[in-house]
Length: 161
Image 1 (cartoon, helix red, strand yellow):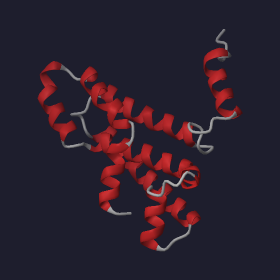
Image 2 (cartoon, one colour; image 1 turned 180 degrees about the vertical axis):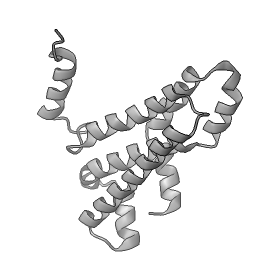
Image 3 (tube, helix red, strand yellow; image 1 turned 90 degrees about the vertical axis):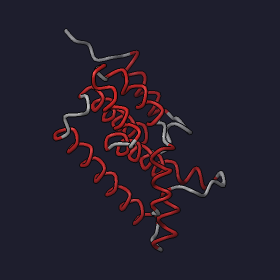
Image 4 (cartoon, one colour; image 1 turned 180 degrees about the horizontal axis):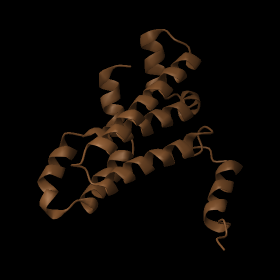
């Protein structure tokens, strides 16, 4: 995939919209300037979580997007550039997702300038993305699976005795 596509893809996911305000809620007043520098340089956790969200979305929704005539996503870009089929491309994108997870986990362990609460928000957003898109386009075409997940979470939660 082109670097240009991936730069756009990582900022076009909803992750940026959620992560930026979250960061300032987690930040100590005295560390505000360092945090602003981190965010404006689109630091590791922000970039990795947004990239993973975008790739998960593309893997799950590409078939429906192609049916609607939308042709630009990471799958079609990768297939065009590398002459690979959809299955090979999906495997490569899953490897990219794994690599971004590794970067995010490494930053979580090694980088102390980032508030732990913010790291958890980024990681939890990625977890939600994996859950949302694990069975396909559950956002664009919700089915009984999503209904059951929401029901089990909000209506019929596990009783704690």
